[in-house]
Amino acid sequence: MRPDIGVLGAGAFGTALAIALAQAGKRVVLWARDVEQAAAMAAARENVARLPGAAFPDGLDVTADVAMAAQAPVLLLAVPTQTLRGLAGAHAAFLADRRLVACCKGVELGTGLLPTQVLGQVIPGAQTAVLTGPSFAADIARGKPTALTLAVEGAGGEALQAALASHNLRLYLAHDVVGAQWGGALKNVIAIAAGVVLGAGFGESARAALMTRGFAEIGRLAQSRGAQAETLWGLSGFGDLVLTCTSDKSRNFRHGQAIGRGEAPDLTQTVEGVMTAHAIAQDADPDMLPVTCMVSALLREQVSLEQAKDLLLSRPLRNERG
Image 1: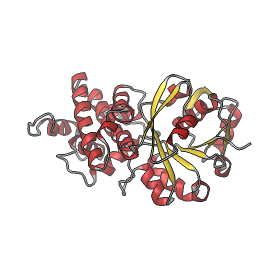
Image 2 (image 1 turned 45 degrees about the horizontal axis):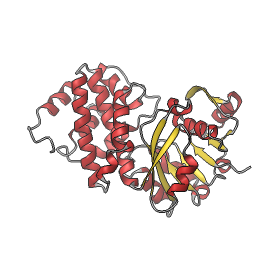
Image 3 (image 1 turned 135 degrees about the horizontal axis):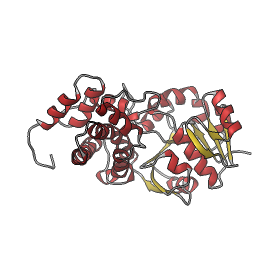
Image 4 (image 1 turned 60 degrees about the vertical axis):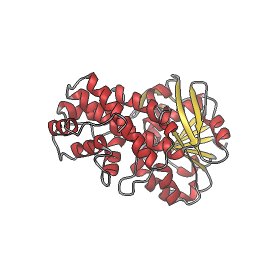
């Protein structure tokens, strides 16, 4: 029987989305790149490696065959931003006539492209959308109430919204695809900085200031790239920023926290904010994006933590709206 939805990417988030959709009565196929991983998940009926304890519903099948997942008319692409181009290029023949929903957050290193822009470049004419917002995989998989933004250009947004929403997974439709992606990408960079602030013992007040000034950076950059200001105040911007900067469930926050403590961060997990910081900082104006540029410099060990703090605090005084 043809699946309703295919999920490409069996990390924690892709697995959680597949579980939530299957729980809502959809026929879902979850694709894992690794044959052994797919076989292990199929046998255990859970993703022990990435999302332990979240059992697979009956309507969820697992495969290592892209063609099987791509039978679905809607495909959720839940792979890291930096690997999206490779996935799309390798399987373009299966993806070309499907609705592709990017579920990754970031900016491609080297090109500075957003996920839907990468897809459009690799698969000209691709039907793309974005699913983004404040969410942790464990919450989604366990049926905890979660609200996300589904950004779709053109027609068909309402039908896609109805297909992907469930009682506990509430989707708000938007049409600013660019803004939704910039909010999701940039909040990861600010979350690394927030983690550094707390890890270094600079205090809650410093984190609040960092988040506020970081949000100002998000607005400046995103709007300069075509985003609508109101989008950034929604779930895909402000909402996602708040969650990611205030919870140790966030991989980006934990990465920064380890650096702030002088510890080696966990490099076995994908931390999208690292490459996004580098991708943006490579041609950015440090006066326009001081936090983002400083995060990149700190991650590259071009400055020490104390130097980064002093450089940010010694910037010229200005109006708050500046």
